[in-house]
Image 1: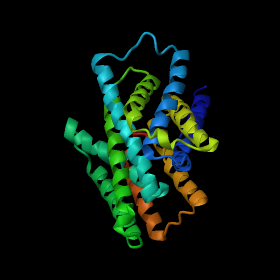
Image 2: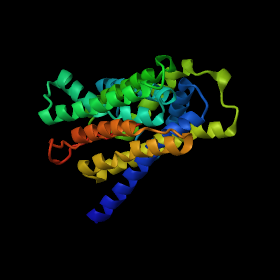
Image 3: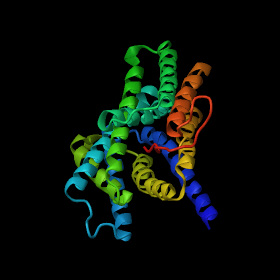
Length: 303
């Protein structure tokens, strides 16, 4: 029975990570500015998550009050602005590069842990951070040799880093919301995003094609509601080590789509830089020791 549960959990995790890896494609294909994309993702996500939470009996009685509600809203601001920055970085730095840089999330978690809770990182963690930083420098150096600063490439990298930091903030907040159904937290956050971004939405530039509307609906229903249902269900069934390993399906799928659909060709050095970032992230997530791998206690990247 436990083996069957583990297999189903792994299947759910793989599906969630594959969906995460395809987000960039739908963002670009929607043809909308970033404010419209995130607004409609939040709007359609709110509608679909409301239905799901209602069917699960999570709306009544209402569990988020006082400090708990304030924390959920703070996490909502962080996660929504994380989407704004990440989606903006796709157009400036490409889906593959932005996704690789976005996977520096664990390092910001370590930084916040040190600043907020006095948690001291191990030498191994610092070593893997240095490895990932070397990879980031390699990616920057290679790309800027062929692109001027006015192309916005470095700006795209900074946006991806900012998105990673905001995701780390949302993760820290989520740790303080123990005992609250994650689907309900997600609902509060996307509902807040809908309200916050409504004034920024450009109603004069709405999609002209049905396929673009379909892209926005998919981002809200599939990549928000369905993906988070799969992800949270998998987290309840799998050990953290397996979650950490399967999480790297997300950047792999994003890089593959960027290459197959948009013809984004990376040099050997760029591939090396991305590999160093992912190795550094894996080392921190899985608590590897430099020279030999250890057991994992992971944070899961979510988009």
